[in-house]
Image (cartoon, rainbow, N blue to C red):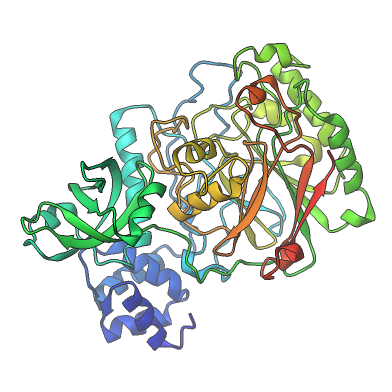
Length: 537
């Protein structure tokens, strides 16, 4: 939004449900980053505010100005002891210098126009060229959770605050305790976390919505067009419900349900030169089923002229097979020592061109804590995997490559999404559909207490505060790709043939695939222009 168009500022605020003073619009128009100032002003005012005053805007701008040239990432988060549960083979991650927060990344609606602030770099290396990949959203060295009740309260409160902010501009919502005092028949809207979903005797759906003030029920009638949306709901996700209160005011009859979602107007950023990235995952070195031949063919191809544009290699977890991950796994190991597995992986990594930029996150088979967010590999494992001076970060992390934001997540929560949602909306054969559900919910692992282990932190690292240009996952060993509101979704299959465990759960893996993304062409309408799937299996 150009600074010289106050009318556009007014329209933007109106679209989010706010009026404003003329002087406030002038201040916003003169701000160095108008859109960021609007975001911060909206975040700073109470939920029941309907008019932004000049004092509201001036307070935000003066706060920003008072920071001088200090980085917004200067607020450090205290580090706690390792969460490795006493297992010396499991990394809790090393603490990098000066932990930043992630508020410096572009607001959602401004995607493609980055602010003047550089994304925080939470990598394992320092002194890098600023044009090299940068990292945001990494928990490494910032884990504060101790498992106390207050930790769980903090992470859910943070989730609610962040995701309710995404919904605030679309509905004129009120806290649940305020809705309780409204007269029957009133139109009302609630932004809440899904605390319970149950069917009534007549086949309708009752959804309990919880916010920071209490809980309120919403009834979705089975004959409404939007009733099918209930099938896509997961516990603990944040949604907005609009409707009309019953005559006694004790229940909200739902007319519409809104998700935080990716704006339909979203446009991806692109690289300003011809450059590509290979997105792979689930190598599983150490398994008897690791397909070394396929890997070698891939590595050899990277040395050919055909792959000259491929300058980045992004690995989304499970570098090795691990030890004790599932019952009787030891019977299928080619390498039984976890450190020897990483040594072997490092040797395979050396086969790729030495000038490639490599970024790696851990997965559930790797030697880090299982609870998400997962910290990066510890110093000992980093030293083993030092080939090509790879960038090592936590799971999940957002990697900015050539101006393109790639959200890397190993993908354990995909199991839960696929298990909970209808097959046409999420399945192992189409993992990109499950990924689209996570984008719609703007959270990597919405449901707490299920199969996905979630670490309670003082902030929720699993919220998608910003919309990525690419969402890259692995874990399910299936190749899948698509686009959701112009976000490219890629699940990059694996390098391991079917194990007995996979056979027992009827998973036939896709082996030896390397999706190649042409970062300069993400804005093309035809996927064949910006995505090439290479098969080496």
